[in-house]
Length: 263
Image (cartoon, rainbow, N blue to C red):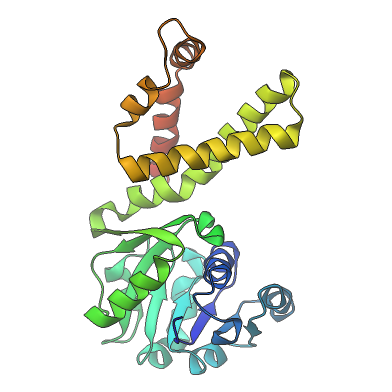
């Protein structure tokens, strides 16, 4: 079990997913974690849910932590960093903010601060997530290795060069929403043909989980995985044809293009 005392400034959905996942697999203990957010009454409720300590200020969190995770909204980051940058100088600073890469944080933090930019997706909450880490960082080799090992308990950890952080974030961070829509749509189809909704959702969810696990273990080309299920003249190839006729793959690529156009 990791012995770092972890502080979190900004305890929203992503931060809660990250801490919740680490607690779930017992990689850390609740008493190691101190959190704060803009509204103390709300953060008290969230902290109680996970058994972690709620603090009234960022300064209190920093003083009680070895590692500080900055998890506020990107547009708030500069304002949050300014008054605490000197306090952060002697800490390991982990940043979670889209569009904020190493160079941008290096300008916002005090010179010499050890920091790393990363972006987790929400499935880290159930130890089935992805964490994108920026290759460029100022952690020591030991700090980087320890942090990567800790996150590896709840996620596939990929180290990505600065130029490709945005697309890696989109592929791993936006697509849970798209996949949930696919899950819902297949669930609706199951209900149409007589399944109860809970059963339909469970079947689809396990199928998604299993298909992903199958790829990660075998690393067969997705096309080969598809072909293995498509018997000549069978039901699956008819479904594949229907998806192609309705622009399934083009729609998926367009969704990524649309998300990237915002960045």
